[in-house]
Image 1 (spheres, helix red, strand yellow):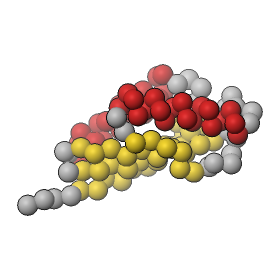
Image 2 (image 1 turned 135 degrees about the vertical axis):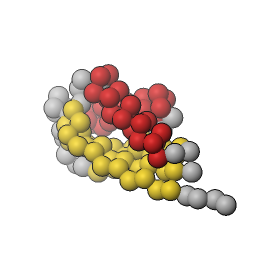
Image 3 (image 1 turned 45 degrees about the vertical axis):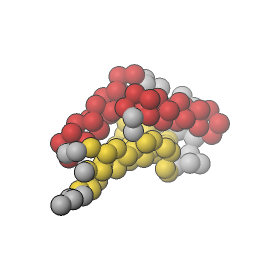
Image 4 (image 1 turned 180 degrees about the vertical axis):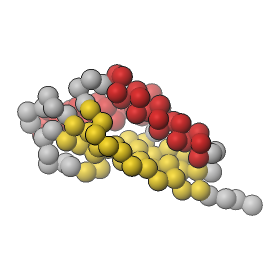
Length: 99
């Protein structure tokens, strides 16, 4: 079993308030959960109007598959959410071996 945890840093240039930003982030995290069956939540930059950091977590049988899923998620955000821009991301893969 493999767990991939990632943080995606976003620029949200069109927002003029925290309320508007939170609406964008909530919509994005809900859609990622529906589309990719991943856990997604805002994890940092809570008080910044035009920036956000979302955390993603997914479980897979291999690191390659988990990293492929993360790449698909990032491409999906770039293609389907023109209101946000990915400015960076980091990831960590945790391996569990059962015998």
